[in-house]
Length: 137
Image 1 (spheres, rainbow, N blue to C red):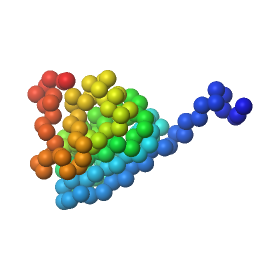
Image 2 (tube, rainbow, N blue to C red; image 1 turned 180 degrees about the horizontal axis):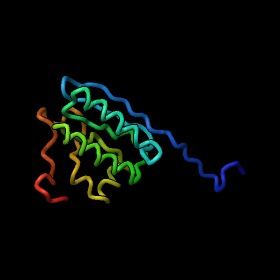
Image 3 (cartoon, rainbow, N blue to C red; image 1 turned 135 degrees about the vertical axis):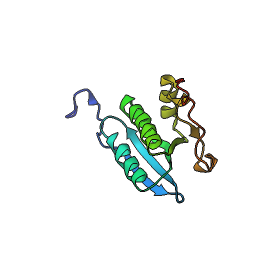
């Protein structure tokens, strides 16, 4: 009974990305909603603006992410690569249960450092990448 076959409705643009500076070199990007192929570009755009503005440490608060697909995982890895290419670091903050689950299943939790709060991230930036020696986790 509805205009949607199967009764399933998935809004394509449900991701909100808010970025704020924590200090001179650290920014916190807070993602809220479904992080998927429909809207993953929003993280890339926000990250690029932060890096262009001189951010050396990008913290991604994923506590409000309700859904993550493979495109979202890929964008997180690309965000890490972009931060490193700019001489910076990237860390995840308080990933939600759905995010933690997918990162664990894919092994990405071994590559991207995660912390419970922005304050828990060392002042010098996140821990060195576990795969920086060429050994992927």
